[in-house]
Length: 328
Image 1 (spheres, helix red, strand yellow):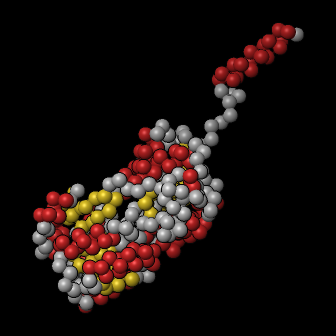
Image 2 (tube, rainbow, N blue to C red; image 1 turned 90 degrees about the vertical axis):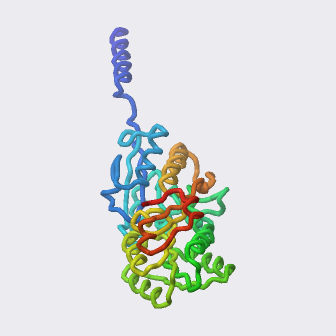
């Protein structure tokens, strides 16, 4: 009888050692809400998105292995911001551990949940938009990083002024998602005594009409705010700005890579990589409301000399020397 009991105990010990008695490791699920690429292009351990790849790299640096420790659940509006509310609700319904999202998608997530942890990879003004109570004490289910794109609007105007003397109105292309940016631009232009031409659009079909209005007003410069509506049409906007001979300033570098003239803003790839640290803390039990929102540590001035030549512009040496990258 004792021998039988001993054999049973030994069998249990062997089963434990071989893992049969071990509970299965929980596979963590990280949602990603995007606005440009398709969900298929955002899926897996290697995607077509440089920013999502940066997030995955950041997680690898922290010891996470895709498919072993976590998987991602990406969704995208594919340039149609009206789809974002439904996609946000869909992600929330998946009972994910955390959702990572960029600025244009955040309002939809705010409407969809007050409990699921949200890591922002870049919000123009997280306090002004109501995502957090303060940068130091977010207080709710949002945390992450800012873009400081609202606060740096004056800097973009200053850079435009160095490039093109604003004798006529400076056109501003924006939509309802970038209302705070427009308001800040109005204040900054008023301080300088510069005139603005508002080119507010409601859908992508109005982009050409907006550029026609800029031409009719004899605008020589243009400021474009990034948004879910406009970002997908970066190449189209850059081409229209070139044909209209508008010296154009953008908030993010991918517009310049698409043929735009100049951009000033944070390094988005670095923001997404740094977002991995927030994801890690939340997965380990931290509350988003207790994690202070971080501000960008690096801003980039990117200039496209090929586009400048096409516009017949000579970039001042003072700007070239301050540029972080010059595209030939």
